[in-house]
Image (tube, rainbow, N blue to C red; front, top):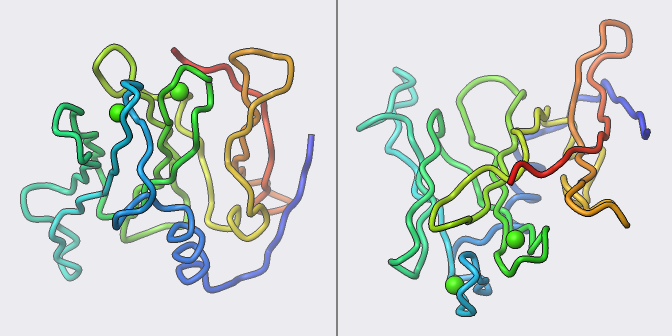
Length: 179
Ligand SMILES: [Ca+2]
Ligand SMILES: [Ca+2]
């Protein structure tokens, strides 16, 4: 298991923004087949209108990932004020492209990384949400999730953990896909 940690303080917002912009599927990027029907479509995240003084949102703090193919239902993400969907490719080889998202919030560098997959007409989580700290993107610039060779249905994920002595650690573990 790879164990790294860093107490360095960087400008997280700029770096995270660059990483997520690079990986994002917003703004008419290359289309992908998210529902596995053989046709490619684009996606984008629709963020709520926020009030940064009262930490509130018009109509609730929920984001939606919407698709250019209207037959594909939107993904609704609660407790979200923004974020850039990440194209993860077809992680399980079933013809559907998986989508990752770190929902933004006003406070804290601790976040959950969600991976969505389209199964039987609806969106579901590919693996359990992954706890990450913004340090993780400084220490690891590859994908958050990788296939495990010769072990079908298992994936290596990068995650963050707080250790009383060592601080915030970037670790990896093997997880099984939920579906
Ligand atoms: Ca499609
Ligand atoms: Ca897939």
